[in-house]
Image 1 (cartoon, helix red, strand yellow):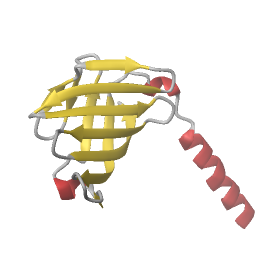
Image 2 (tube, one colour; image 1 turned 180 degrees about the vertical axis):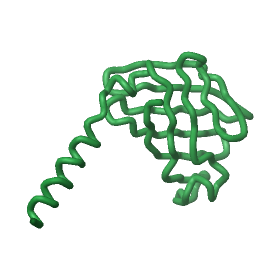
Image 3 (cartoon, rainbow, N blue to C red; image 1 turned 90 degrees about the vertical axis):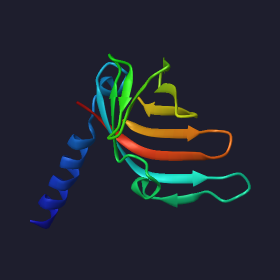
Amino acid sequence: MRFRSVLLTILLGLVASDVPAADFDGSKPLLCATMEAHSCDPGLTCKRSLPADIGAPRFLSVNFEKKVITGPARTTPMLTVNKEPNQVVIEGMEMGYGWTLALDSGDGSMTLMIVNSEDAIVLFGNCTAL
């Protein structure tokens, strides 16, 4: 009986992880959850925290058709979208900060860096197709 429950758990995990790569190639809208944040200042070690602890949004909507990324407080335009074999890289500017979102086109994991000349924030998370 125990063997069957372990086997079922493994099989369900394989099914859940079988996400089509086309979901993350820039052709579908996405909902991204930020999971981990690092805030960095020159000359200091970056501080790790939760996104909400530094005022970063927990969720972002990525709309490739409208070329915008929307958070709970504002919408920002995508200035460039570069589709590469293994990732989609999106860049923009807002409120004196430049940002780059790198989306893994295989599994939907993402890294978002928000920078200006004084500091940087790096967010890590995962996206799902809507």
